Length: 357
Ligand SMILES: *Cc1c(COP(=O)(O)O)cnc(C)c1O
Image (tube, rainbow, N blue to C red; front, side, top):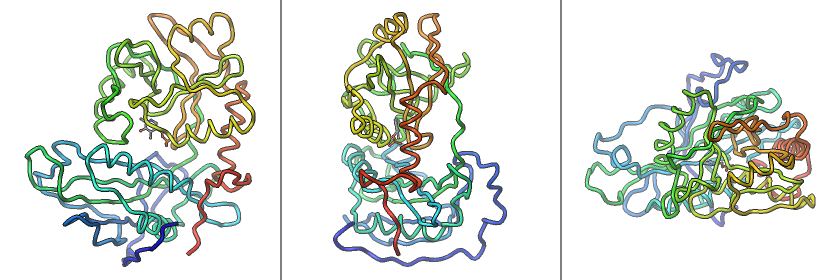
């Protein structure tokens, strides 16, 4: 993929935890596989790339990421096809996005010269950590954080880049009940909502907890100016189907440009479904609900692909959507996208990277 590839040393673990891992009870993100990739940014360049056993790292208490959250992350998945091939879904799109996040957070870009090689080697090395069960995968967590031991507020001169991986189960196929948020905001235009950076998540914890205390799984985030137009659902992008038209809020600066979002829109357009990226707000949803044209609402993201919304709560009223089995379009999109990721359906959009070492 890159022009030149940087090769790096690989130190294998002598104490694999694989045999002690219960693959029948995988909690998302709770188990790490045996190895991780690390690289340091020093003197204006990336150096010291290597794969080592998964282990704790030490940083200065003054490490600037710990104080000012100068960091970015990604979340992507690797799969094992039924013929044994190792597949990584859209790694070049994740590199593009982590570099967009890097620019916003005033951080150095990652070159393709070792990003793809790091992923290939890491997944290849820990391939036995990819759960065998259908729908399961290896979740990859690349992230970069500022390491200057200095508590003045300025961009760090040094950074660490790490990729570790977690075996994850086929995501729980439940629906979510959501509440429209009309006090807090996830992100405002001009802020960092379109960067995949930790602070966005820290800011969402309290509103999410308050919503959970009232019995809701997730928040429907609204715009920061009027609390009228929808932005995202929890940590997923948000889509509606009204009158057979797939509608999603436009990427206006406060919304994270999801790769699953892009996939779903691309496939739907390819199928000839009418797709609209435009503002969509509470009034329109309530209206569509009342006249019977609201067919579907769902979130999209790498973790679950599609998560159906069962109920939307707003201003004391509950809007209950059709049973999730009956949502023909989103179920079809979900299955087709999973089939592409697992190498079952033809990769007609060129999204699947096959590891070939
Ligand atoms: C990562 C993320 C998404 C989903 O992006 P995918 O690329 O589809 O996984 C959506 N919203 C937020 C806030 C995110 O951080």
